[in-house]
Image (cartoon, rainbow, N blue to C red):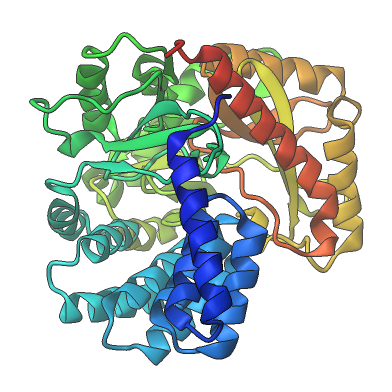
Length: 483
């Protein structure tokens, strides 16, 4: 790519700061401005070193603690980022931004009570703080308080529907429009959008003013991926797309039929794909005295799984062993509609549960991870991986040679699921049956590709994640309309 004027300006500013720092080596302000510029230039290692040196001289610098936390999180050091944000909140309890940053990471980690306390502190300090309202809305949605979530999202996003992310490339950027929903259920694609290549404008679909022009773009990525949660947002995206001739990744018409119950119906006939019986029913029907009979008429018996649509990572998702336990389970779950699921036995000969994840990018299959757990609700971050070398070795074998591990039947079944979904970017969670068939748990666009923590134990996982990143980048570059 040709040189980009904005990068030349930033480099010139950095050169000037270096000259000033040589004259005033004890200046904290110059060091802070320099660390910020290094981040903007994409020199993450140099920026990390600059922030560490600054904080060694001024451990309570609020801007450095918050910005360093943001840099650490963006580069995969999530635990260190949380430490930096916690320091910012503790050393500057009167400043809302540290509380908001820390709350966002606590929410990401599932520590909802602690996150709530920091969001509420931020809003006491600054009642109109947009980011605090946005985050608090997300937290209330996780807790099942849809009305409260809507109130805070309205205050957080109204008039702020468009955000332009930093660009750190050296050449002219490729402008990309990223469409998301305030309701959540978005494809977690932002970590895969290389900010040295793409200048990304994020548009909150429900709050975008149709009288305004769309930000410049050569490509549109529809990141609204949860069909059970986001139908109003998908409708808003359809209206936005009518105003653009740019290519679209994950068109809303392909997202719409990927709800859990819809997928169970349309994927059930695929060869070697075992799909559970899934039925969505009104809460009132499941709370009624004859609910077990209603479920039986739908082909479901106990034990069964019950979940609130629109939630992920195991939130509001329970196993109901007996008919007598149903009423209490329904009472504990939020939402007017609940989804009942026939459980699939994903245990291996060792009686442990396994869940594989494979990503679909531009028509190709990429292994991402294998989680092995003693519990039926398998998620990678709670599975028995960190302390079990044998489990990590099993995962490493899967990542190194997926066709060998899954076999011909398993690979053909995954290809059939990919073709049925017809999505540009998606993923599938599954187990492998006794005869090599795929036991399908979930298949949609909302699958996250988290980089592993900076720990040598996870070195074997990094090439698999890098391959997915490279595939996404190649797909987007290949699809973009020439500027």
